[in-house]
Image 1 (tube, rainbow, N blue to C red):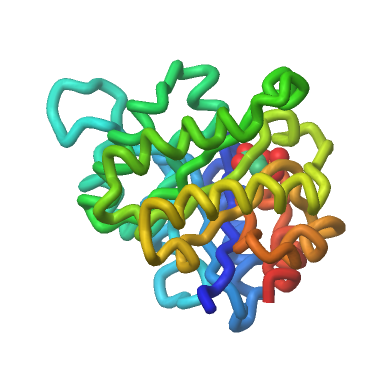
Image 2: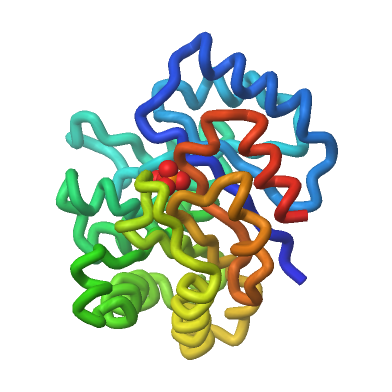
Length: 248
Ligand code: PEP
């Protein structure tokens, strides 16, 4: 069975001192986790966090975004090769905050996934519906459309990705999807992956959206929930460590 993955998305939070304190507290408390664990700091701190994690096998480094271009005149972009230089193992791609605020389309997301895979970085591909889309009964259609763009461009190595189902209405709101609501969508995504690859069972499908120390165990017990993408709760070491323990 594939190990679960718990990944912390720090978003645009932190600073040199806060990052150091957080990573040291995580490393002091994590022991030998039964699941894979990653933290995704903002890009300017990747080098700092890489050094702090050096020598630890328990926590790996992730990034929050990657350019869809290989190199060149793309001011502000960070390429997959640059992330690789800093030991990045995972990269969040297509987070709803980027789809919403940076106008990232399904095609952009698919191209970013392609760049990450080509550099040997595992993309964590985020999909999820807004509240309005859920209320209109569009949830399945939306997540399938988002994932199918990625499958279309990356079909040959689709089993190398991680998927994160993150209902937009649950992100940062404290309003978590119920375990059965989440499982229902995860099953739809698993079926879609099964149609694309015979290795669909080994693709980890994470849940994200107000997962915390109190609700993690029940969500992670669902058959198609293979881990979590954690925002707010990843900034507090004790909470993040409890989620990691719940995934064991
Ligand atoms: C996220 O941003 O990926 C996320 C899941 O945030 P939160 O846990 O704060 O809802």
